[in-house]
Image 1 (cartoon, rainbow, N blue to C red):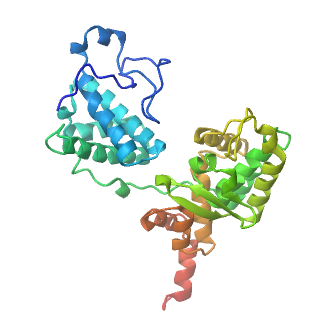
Image 2 (cartoon, one colour):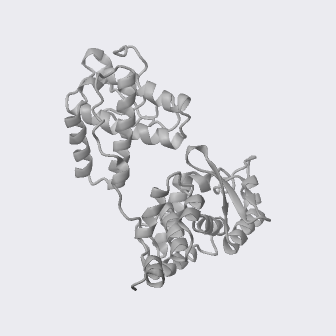
Image 3 (cartoon, rainbow, N blue to C red):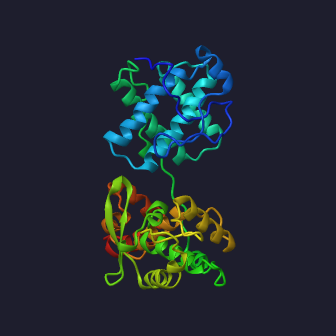
Amino acid sequence: MNPSTSAKPLPWASPSAQPSKASASPLPGTPSLRLTTSKDKDDAAKRPASRFDAPVRDFLTFCKVECGFAPATIAAYAADLRDLWVWMVKQKCRSWEDLDFERITAHLRSLQDKGLAVSSIARHVATLRVFCRFLKSQEHILEDPAEELSQPSRWKKLPNVLGREEMDRLLAAPDADSALYLRDVALLELLYAGGLRASEAANLAVDGVHRELHVVRVMGKGSKERIVPIGGPALRCLERYLDDLRPDLVKEPTDKVFLSRTGQPITRVVVWQIVKRHAEKAGLEDVHPHTLRHSFATHLLAGGADLRVVQELLGHSNIATTEVYTHVDRSRLKEVLARFHPRP
């Protein structure tokens, strides 16, 4: 099954293409860069990536329409496939039929050589496994070249966690004289008190904050809703922001809690930037929103919380994902061993 060369090109960049102000992407989360250069358009027969278009387009449409994946998931698939696509063009490949196990492993090695983190490479593996299964199901390829790839879940590293004193420094970092002080403090407190992801904080709705119950209702991965209790300090900061600052920020009707200076809902990228800025001010390195989520889980377990409870609070579908935090702080495990083992 070969796509027609007359098909509308995906808005992605070839190795020699430069970013342009092209039209919006046909699918949420796909890169808004053109695939072809003007030279390529002059001679479509010489365009090596022309037979890549339709299978990728169909795959992303399948993920959006049939699977109902979140825009962030589609964006991750799009970015990973763009990297693979560009690499294959550089290798003189002309279609997905040229993708075999050797080329996949060579591509993954190239990612490692570029300095990508293990977690990022594992995500590429997950993308390749799903995409190759799709290619085979649609008869774009005869055999699945990614079938023998190891599961990404086997590739793990311990998360970066802040200590109690470091966490206090971060929460105290925002400048009280800043116009957005109340927003930034409320955001930092909520990320730590509830273990929220950056996207969950950015998408938090005003009616999702239940003050009397001390909980917030968030929409997690896979559009799964969960209720997260938050402590007194975080709730007080959130209430102060909602009552004293947010009304002044609102320019147009919106249900989102956290707004920018111009009144627009902040994005997960902005959440990342806010955390990064205040972490640097506090003298902390390599801190991002997920660091606060890691710290939330680790501190709960160190304080004696049950692993299943932490799993529920984090919204993990598999407890094996939560178990990584038991390796970060061993103090609780040592205490249990000392108390209950017959030969301490």
